[in-house]
Amino acid sequence: MKIVVGNRKLGILLSGRGSNFAAIADRIAAGALDAEIALVISDQESAAGLAEARRRGLETAFVPAAGRSRESFDRETVERLRQRGVSLVCLAGFMRILGPFFVRAFPNAILNIHPSLLPAFPGLDAQKQALDHGVRFGGCTVHFVDESLDGGPIVSQAVVPVLDGDSVDDLSARILAAEHRIYSEAIGLVLDRRCEIDGRRVAVTNE
Ligand code: GRF
Image (cartoon, rainbow, N blue to C red; front, side):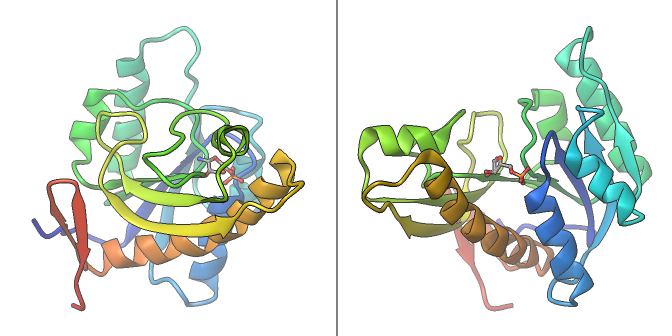
């Protein structure tokens, strides 16, 4: 099934630092990614990424999560994304799990980036999990979001070595540099309608 997004408007969801968001915004500003960030949403009012989005003059929203159901949060977020005409939702360090309501509202139109070579090390602290396991290579994965945790079809991955003596910070920094590169590339592939999903596999076509 070819993934056809309706326009090139992105909605970014983040909870923290926002370096992946900034990398995407930089690529757009440089003319290397043909897209528009229509809205940046955070569940954390004090997220550095939200402040950075404001500094860049982007439309932002804080959607509080405390004291409400997952579906209530998801409904408000979906409503805001729809109001801004967003076609592709990009999770960039967004620390909440999206419920079925959200995933069904944007079928095959939500991407996430995860700092491991999935399906290895899903969930939190993926870089520490990789180090503790003793793997020789780590990396990152951009995948479509479905109702599983870090389990949707994979668009793109990058591999980095684990070096002797690496700390979690060392490995995380090496992976992060790769994240900043492949996330924009994967977004471009989806926006250019070059992704076809067949079961778990994503084929990338030339046109
Ligand atoms: C990244 O490592 C990303 O893979 C994970 O959360 C981290 C977010 O970093 N999902 P940042 O907020 O984009 O700097």
